[in-house]
Length: 264
Image (cartoon, rainbow, N blue to C red):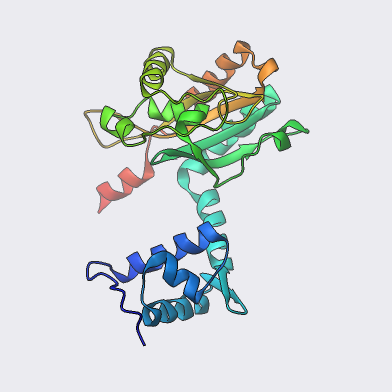
């Protein structure tokens, strides 16, 4: 018997699956009732989709609980490693880490968050930086995020308000953030000083892929950073970071997605 909740006629099957995946990812694991409570889907719809998603290994069931399945893990890992942008950037990221001996990140922007695409490091400090591939952090608190925000429109910036505070040094004033982004645009790189993780500092800059939009010539796709203990954050790292940016931008000058579409 249905519980009377309306699934919403505008929701497609993909919308419902996406809602379930988001709910399970956020909670870690959920029962059928838990999925219903978080998504608002009816019992029959929820049960049918859970069975289908388990069968396809998008979800894994333990007793009455459901968690993310191994197929999603495989797709996520393969997607990260085989993406053309990642493959072209990776040699330079490795070079950057070897040249500096510091923790190196590559990230992209997702709404108000920076999402880590790669993390390279060695020694104990890499474990003191609590980032991992696929993790989200508020963009205005990270060097990669601030570099990416600096190339966004005013409308985009208004959409990330209010600004989350992670540490005592996090910038939470919109006016102060806009001033900082103006400096980043002029300087060509961002600085983060303990705003995401106490005691950790980073320099960041954007890296770009070729674009088919002649009005902008290039499209920002990601950002890279060098992180060090805040007391050891040295501006002598910046020229090495900018050299890595130049290498990556050069390797991205031909976008295979655009080339492929032109052939169709």
